[in-house]
Length: 266
Image (tube, rainbow, N blue to C red):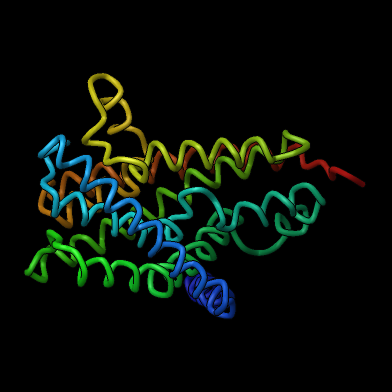
């Protein structure tokens, strides 16, 4: 089997693995829908007081909410992807076996996580997003080109998300317990991605900073592409640069970690 076919099979396996958790998927759909409703009414009240906050009207703000709920599990904004399993394999020493396999460790986990992300988008993201679009006024495009550009932005967001979480997971080679790193991932993910509030609405220097961080490539950029607030090509370039930087950093950190594989805990 060629390398390309191997990683396609790994991605397909990641998709099938999460597809087996039907009850968890249904619970996730329900949870995202409920949280979407809570956020929508909160946003509507906020936008009544601050019209055009962040350059959005109310319909765009509502669209942002439902897009965030669709991408929450897809991009593992607060974790819940491959990183927990990977860190456990590092802790137990099983990663030593992974390093000897005839497959690239980083690409293997990337393929696995992309399979998971695609399933979460289809299985857990589409229904809340469709519900929100049917029940509330939204700012969705009517041309196919914008939707295709949005899907490209989502695909790039998946890679950026993986890059962030891969770096966090690799800290397990140096930390005896990765709980703190995973909690930091949760906090930065929910705040810096725009899940709490669109990054366009962050004031002053804080807004300027968070909009150039890699987390902005996860929710904010796809949202702006979908709603016509951003030119797709510069948006793709922003995401692609961060994807390359994060993957390269992960490669360097992985190389350093492989030199000092320590079986922790026996």
